[in-house]
Image (tube, helix red, strand yellow):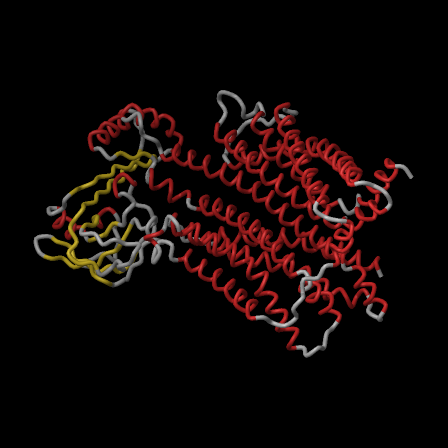
Length: 629
């Protein structure tokens, strides 16, 4: 048998093992090619097109390039490592390491060439689907053409070439460091050298849990107890959660398994052999890979949660810039605008609001903490603009609290004393977490809503008065015409519709990019853990054969196999969801959001897709075990 025959036979033999790698490679190429194609598609690449889509596709492509290269390197490393015994046998029959590198070169070239063509063909249709999705998200009506773009093909080729060269270099370095004996024994090495629980293991295991817990606590108090070092807190949290996750997988899990093993007093079942024993014997290897998977998943879910939370807050964000259809803060401009509306016979509803800045003598409402610096001034407004039936006498409410509700802590039914002709004490009975004033008017600060007569009294002693003139159109069809009238009064004014469209564009492209970057991360995490599970299952085939010889059936082993896959998939998922949850909570505090529903939706969808990989892995592993015995 000559060298070419060996290469061909070896490739056909291993093609089924490369199935998941080929699938993930095709998906990666499709995603990257689709993103790059968007930049050069005529439907959006013209003078009248939205730059935000081009920018989003460019950012997405750059991120994907890095993600895909790293993922392919990791996945290829797993495949090369599981073939070390095979490479050792080739060297024993006379092949040199140069021949093996050449073999890998031919195999990788064939796979990259075929998957590259398939991925780009599918990518043309994928780019059309992506473009249709983003245009739908951004509410843009335009035709979508289907075409190959040469720059997209060139950039995809560069991605494949970079990945191909790095994989060959990685394979060369891997084989260079190992002797034939090392490669033969590589997969049979056990890491469970000390079955007893050691003091170091206990310390590191507990330390890992403490680090993760303290990292979560810091995220909840980022703007509270740790507000003074808020610039460094994210980096501290990142270090604590990443290192803590590794120590948890490395020592805490080992500590739990050893404790369970001791509690059985030597009574080991077939489930223990398939599940706990195989994990404990490669704990160090599992710890590193599970930590990587958990971090990748946490980043994915966090990014998706950030996008979902930002999208859910768009109404409050728009209202902070333009609470009504058109808004002015200067009386003269408001008068001119009203005159033009009257002359054009356009029907509208005026919404006038006013607030005054007054001096605070005593504040019992806001809790004194590091995230709140007590001030001697506060904005107040009149109830005649709100018509709230609860505001009578010295009862008051705190309004315009949308952006501050997460940052500021408060006590209801406490008094705020304000300086007027005499001292006025207002009991704050409730808060309104909506946007009532433009940022330019209230500076996004909370505003105390008091009765009309009290406001008129205190207004005389105010240090500053801000006015807001809002106008809601009774006929939305007049929007474009009124917009021209408003521009003639103030060229810099933006209608609520324009502001909303701008935010929709920004949030839409954010969701677009984060969603498909999340998909890339998800594919990477799922494929890595799938390949890892397949690798471990085939390594343990001799153990399955021994269990079969002593009387255990395929069905007897399925429970342990299912638990092992649940461990490999479920534990990193739980850690990643916890990481993402607390990161999303901190982000929501920063943004002033309170609705956790978008976060829960993202987590559920991610978990469902993630467990599809687990089911595929279980089916494949079960088939391997069944055929091996």
